[in-house]
Image (cartoon, rainbow, N blue to C red; front, side, top):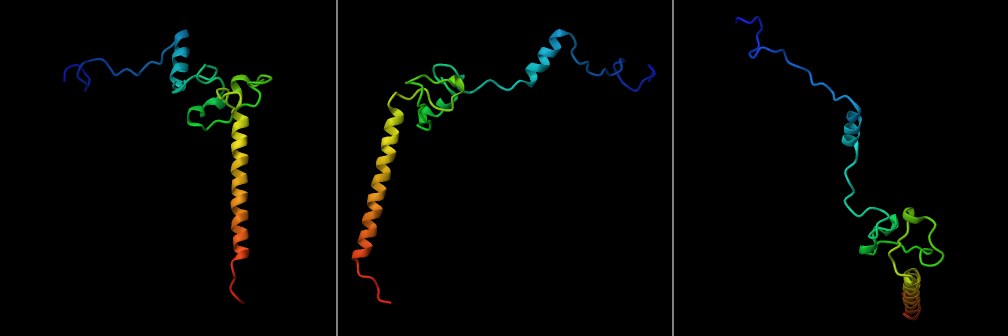
Length: 121
């Protein structure tokens, strides 16, 4: 055709120009930033420590120091700060009782094996 080029529309294709200026670095940083957290922020009343994350499901471990001398690890504590003051003691008591029951049942099963007549060799 008459314009000397094979393209229609006249202007040559332009390459995208990267943004420049002081706002360009902020825009690039925002593009690389991770998405916002899906749950409550650590340090909030819903999540006072990172170890409090499983509290609602009962999957946490109570902090031994939070209700007594105070926890020095604060938000970074791996243990739950939402559990009640006596929760650690209650869970330990339940665990020990479960172990006692298991030992008793194993002992009874062992005693009943000794009482039953065995096969002759």
